[in-house]
Image (cartoon, rainbow, N blue to C red; front, side, top):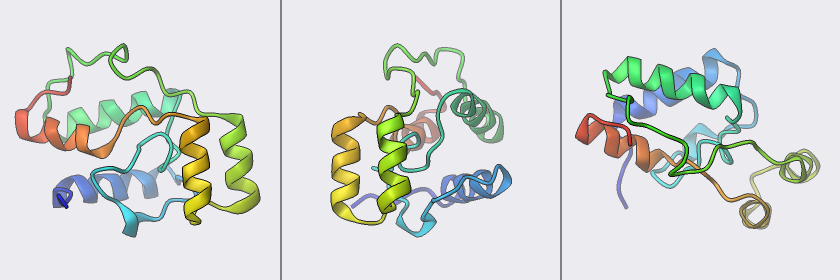
Length: 119
């Protein structure tokens, strides 16, 4: 399994601490981690996250568009599910992915680090 670039991992951890992102298990970060579903970053916060990512790593994000991924808006049903049962149980994660399709994953950011462009 592919590992996350250490600087990207540190950036995500620092971002989550800086903006007090709740219910994030930073030990389970993997390339398949969803920014919007697993880390609970969506709506306006996802734009801030993308801007800070591009600025921090000097990535060209001028061609980045949400048309490719679909704008992450979150889901009230998923939020209720997380609130009632937590997000550590595998069945909760599977049900959440059925109700809400993750839009942006860590491997997208990792490929942007390699190419220098976020598309």
